[in-house]
Amino acid sequence: MKKLNFTVIFLLLLILSSCKTRKIIGSWEFIEVYQGVTITKVDSLKSKKNTSVKGEGILIFNDDSTFNSMDSKGKYRRKGMILKMKYPELKDTTSLKISYINKNYLLLSAIKNDPMTWFYKKVKKE
Image (tube, rainbow, N blue to C red; front, side, top):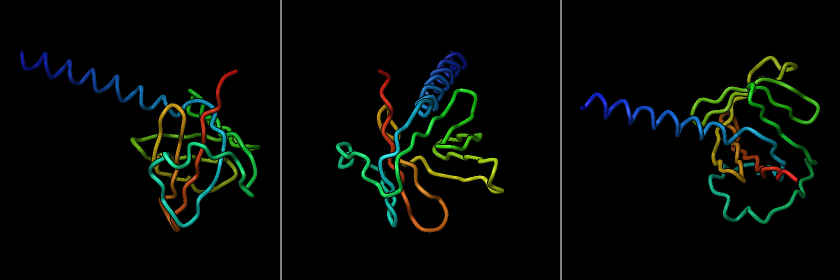
C-alpha cells in the first residue's frame, strides 16, 4: 500500500513539474529591463507597456528546446528555476534565474555580475 501511495505521489509531482516547465514555451514581448535590482513580483509591473530605450523584441521559446531572440537563434535548457541559453555567436552559455513565471508574465534575472531583471509579457494569440 505504501509503495502504491509513493508511486501515485511521484506521478503527480512529475505531471505538475512538466506543466510548470511548459509555461515558458511561447512568445514573450520584452517590456523593460531593470538594472541594479532583482524583481520577483509582477504586481506593480502589470500595467507597464514597452517604453524601454533598449527597444522592442519578442523572445520565443519552442518545444524543441530552441529559442529565437530578435535576429538570434539558440538552444535553451531549463532546470528548475534556472534557464540556460546558448547563443551560437557567443562562447559562453548565458544563465538566468526565472524570478517569476505564470501564463502571462515572465521575469528573468541575472545570476552573475550586477543585479538586473528583464520583464516580459506573454504574446496573446489573435
